[in-house]
Amino acid sequence: MLIEYLYSQRKQTMPDTDKCPLCNRELAEPIVRHHLIPPSKGGKDSPTVPMHKICQAKVHAVFTETELKTYYNTVDKLKEHEDIAKFIKWVSKKELEFFDTTIKKK
Image 1 (spheres, one colour):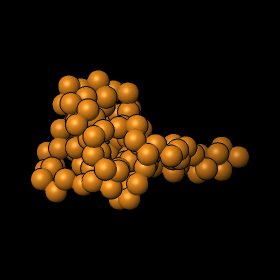
Image 2: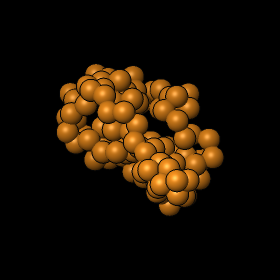
Image 3: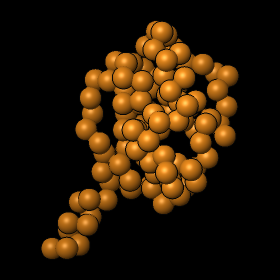
Image 4: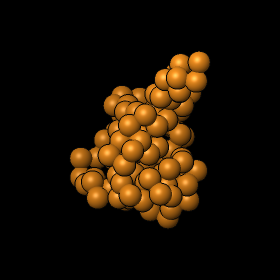
């Protein structure tokens, strides 16, 4: 019984909504599922949230995977960071499908 419970809890996803949890705009393609704890840092089976591709790209441009694992592992904590707050203000003025190819991963 315990094994069945643990197996059922392995791959959790956060509830899908019609808005990106980071920028709070309506979701539009391209959409990705963001692992709150990076798979490379033990988060392979951690909860995921749907997010605009540009929002996820910005998260990975600002934080290292270690930072994401150790502190920035919730959407609220991501939003606390000054660079993310500036990004949210900037991206809120863009079309839903906008994607900036100049964002580089950290």
